[in-house]
Amino acid sequence: MFRKNKNIKNISGKPSENPRKNRNGIAVFDGNTDLYKIFSDMEDELDPKISPDHGYSYESDVHPNIADSASSGSSGATSSISVIKDVKHVIKDAKHSRPNSKVSPDHEIHGEDFHGKRSGNSVFRNRSSELPSASRLAMRKDKHGIPFLDGSESLSRLFREKSYETGEEEVFPKLLEDSLKGKNRDAIMREKSDRGVPEPLPLKKRLKRYPPAQNVLDLHGMTSAAARQRVEQWLRRLWRNGFFTLQIIVGRGIHSEFGAVLPDVVEDILIRLKKEGVVLWFEWDRKRKSQSGALIVYLNQFD
Image (cartoon, rainbow, N blue to C red; front, side):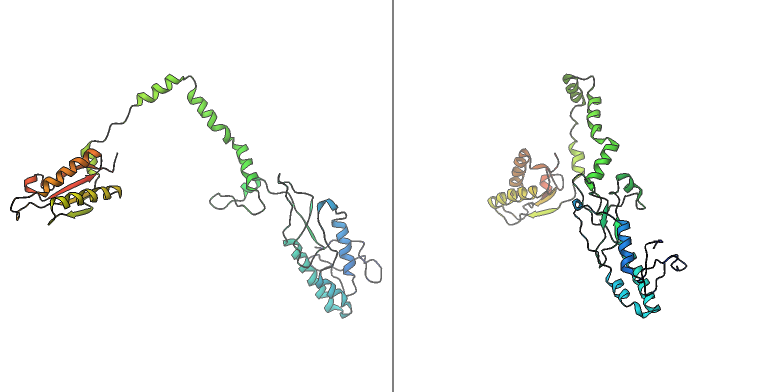
């Protein structure tokens, strides 16, 4: 939006006392208006002094579209309409351009005036306010109550302010001091020892946690020596792999001339591995050794 400026002059050098405006209050210029002079005056009025310390640089060129339109001032009403459209376009670019700010380690902005993004326009500038504080960000939340963050906000500054507000750093030392108040070392150790060690779970309840047999080893046709080596290697490997329940088929020796031999061999191995902590428990599938042809083995996976 343009405001009335007494310094506005046309090419003839005479001031335009009452420039015509449209229904939105925007000044309407004709083809004889010196737009370069208008925007030069606006530049001096918006930002009369730029300190070299700010490190900003700009050119005083007029937007190319406006310059081209102004140079064709002899085209009359058509040129005036074109100029107004170009002016609106420039103002829109200046409004929506984001400032390129320089931020110190303390997150303070150097200077007050900033250039907008250069899209052919170096006359208009945006004045940027300070970075939004934590309280300001807290107001901008989604439907779940989570605040929105953008690229201009410093996360370290945000969480530092949040810590100061809640005083979280002082919570743990205070709780520790309150819990130890009036207690010496002996009282603390006695309190811990009075709690005692929880009783181990009975074997019967532990075995109820075990699943049915997860793997089966059939020893039919093996000699005693081969079965002894095979069973021990198999049990240790599955124990390391986290298995719980196994089944070992030893047979009843019905077709053997000297009776069943493998049940005794496997039973000796299981007794030894139970002492070593590999096997928790084992039992015959039909409860009695003479009537069973397999063993159910429970590996020690629960301490």
